[in-house]
Image (cartoon, rainbow, N blue to C red; front, side, top):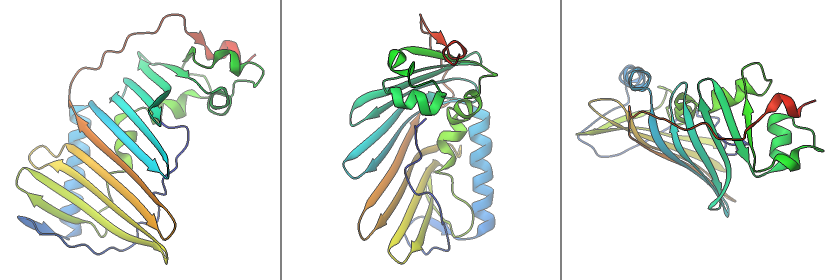
Length: 233
């Protein structure tokens, strides 16, 4: 879960791609069927561990953790420094952020109060205004959303035990986008993903690796958390 959505993940357009493999197909029906398999497999297995890295210029953001539909344990590091920890346990979100300004913007905590709770655990409950967005942002589906392509213009390539879904797109006269998702051929579970947006003046990349599919996630409720509602007045 990031404070902001930095990478330009828009304008997929029509792409061209070429690669050597055991077999490949640009058939939209074959790609669509594979995407259906991926979504079904992710839903069925339910949980996974992931490391998601975004690089823009000199800044690197890494989200490492585990998530499912109703449970999460995620940590955000910016340039190797922990900035945010968020847990989802039994329908309650627990958030600890080192940035007072982020507490103001994400949780709407008044600027006169936020500095006192930077680095403290804050619990966010159903019914709190901030709950819905945070809840959706900390699901496994949310984590994978950017990496699963549409069927249009996607090249499907099978290399025995793994299958790649690749898209290349021209976003503008000076900007191009490449995305690749690698899945296990037999189970359709994602293994890794990459998104790269490059222009004549800059480059941005976002990548993810996934493992521990189906493993139980059991974060502990942090002690001493303060209810968000009590900080809003």
